[in-house]
Length: 152
Image (cartoon, rainbow, N blue to C red):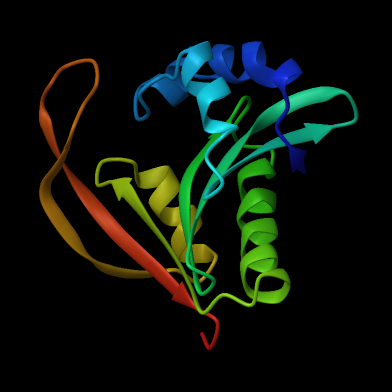
């Protein structure tokens, strides 16, 4: 895991072209990724294995006590990289940043991601009915809220 850099922009944009990613996440443009570098509350991390780009992790820091797991996108799912990213996030948030809470929102229909979060100890906290609009179809979709406390 390392901070994203200018050299990663093309890989980040291309990652969002994978069908298993684009089905749930709206794709950023190169300008979107570049612009995020200047937002201090938004941290972009590259998941890498050696020189191989494996995925992207976005975290948003709210004050000093709360971290939003904003996005995980993995190039090749089913290899444990998502689980690694979640474990890294929790360690980073609770041990390094001394946060009290990590939270996220996920499309209700994204059963694979929801299962991953639940296995990592996140608790389902409710549903935002029609809480998002799918970027391709414009259909409204439910969002599920999950959270984990340092004391969990």
